[in-house]
Length: 288
Length: 305
Image (cartoon, rainbow over all chains, first blue to last red; front, side):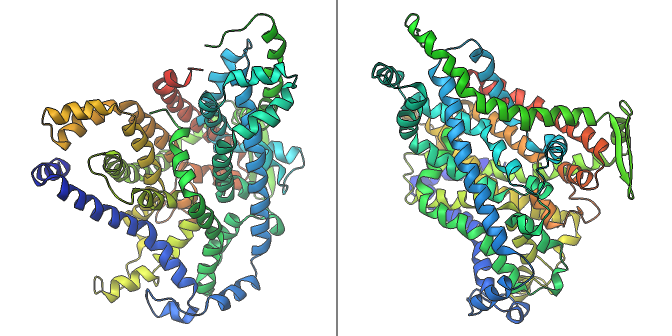
């Protein structure tokens, strides 16, 4: 209703006014996207006493003190950082390499099972990991892999979403004649994949490596079920622990530094690579 | 379609199977076996009563009966749906609006790359950290309450997390912030894919931008809209990190923010495997049905290969 009215008004006021409205709305929305992070950065620089005394938008000088308190506190944050990094980096590498391989198998070869396997992979794309969590825990326990990173890294090899993206990309970037040419030159199939297909797929691999890294870095549900040893925990688990602690006794400056510490790496990487990431999102879903 | 050039291709095609091995092996071990095991477990009584293990003992469909008759699952299903709808309506509205603006060639918005970067940013933020941030920001003595008091909007702190409405509102707002950028970019890509001659023809005929949006853009966007709605619904059913961290897993106030996956997580942690299995199977069926709809809607596009 309101929308129709608004648009009726827009009809009269023409392009210029519509542009002004668009800018105003976009600025307001951008403000709402960034405001929270701004307060987070500000508050990370303020001492507990300053934080209790009220809101301000001006940074203070206690960032290093808060940071030192956090590092020497009870939370094993360096372990958390390190573990998160290892798991996310290994997942990104394995996931993109093997997803490209799977996509290549479907893209470049004609075989009988292909008619069943391709639709099958697309069907399982949407099944959430949570619904198999019970069997997953039991399996991991039986394999003796509790508190190990393997059950968090290896399963990413079979990730239908990344596979689908790679498949889409191959259709536009990998001509089959190129593979034929490699064969005529006597290149083995495996070598062709590693030395011709992978380099051609670099842009797609980069985008998906970032996405896999970020989603592994942010993952909370599965790691929380697998990792129980303090030295094995990842950052999201530590955040949850921070939340579960009697937080009123906590130095709030430290809480803000901890939150900043866990999201800052992703923000920095994103800002550097934002152009590729934003372009990459649309490609991976349905074609327009 | 690719044409096989004689028998030469056949020699290579076994490599199709070889390259599929890693995917298939990992899929079978880490997804298929757990899935079958989950379904199997849902037919057994198997839980911890204090320190003693009860079961596993085959009980048929008793877990399902207990699950549906206790009423909890309906409450949590309702919560999940309410949270999803509260998040999705503003999200789709914003996304359609922004998508239309970004893809409008006549509007020629400057700095649209900057805006796209900004609106997509929250999507990459660790949901648990984002939720923890909101928890501290909106706590009784937190910055938002101080801010609202300093500008004289309220006289005493508003307990955001003690009222069902505001707690749900916060969760919906966080999710909306995290996902509207993604939806905008998907819809925008869809809008850019529409043949521009249609817009030009409409312009020549003197159509207003409102008419163009409702008569051309929206109908042509239908497949991608269905895709966005269903995938968002599947994502909504999986809602976990944000409410879990915000309420420390309690789903307070009065279990009004307890979602289905939080319920599952609770069963998994208390080792109540029978019930966890039954709940997982219900969720699995639900998502499979929704996925099949997505598959049907977009399938024609994807199967081209």
